[in-house]
Image (tube, rainbow, N blue to C red):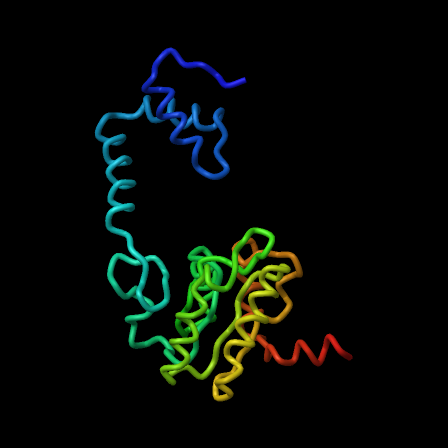
Length: 211
């Protein structure tokens, strides 16, 4: 049974916090009551930060990472290896891989994984834009750094097939130091870093699976 509040303002604030993923109404109430104990300038700064985030953050037109400019700092950094592109599911995975300091190329954020059960097909994520980047001819390696799940493997295989017409591009994947079923964002930095350094050709997975 939903808790009733004497104040409609309190109810509205709790409902907004409870709409966030992983936040139940009890946790939402605790957060709202915490904000009420803070000074008005602190709460105003909190609210303005959220509003500015929504208004000013955009997605990089090259890799689809979050950015405050049309092209994110990683894509616009001349010291990055533009011939190597690491394909990830989401922005959190970019952060995880950057923390390993083992990848010095660029990224491509798909914004999801192929999942027929959830009604998500190849057209619903940023695969076409990846192919267009490869078509430009400046990329020599595509690293598939997707979670070792059924959805991740399905997306890996689809991308591999889409890139087959470009034999000059090496398609690799993370070494299976990332356990099957694990998501990238929950993998420790040491294991993830080693998986990047020890990546293998995606085509080799067919050889191993048939042996």
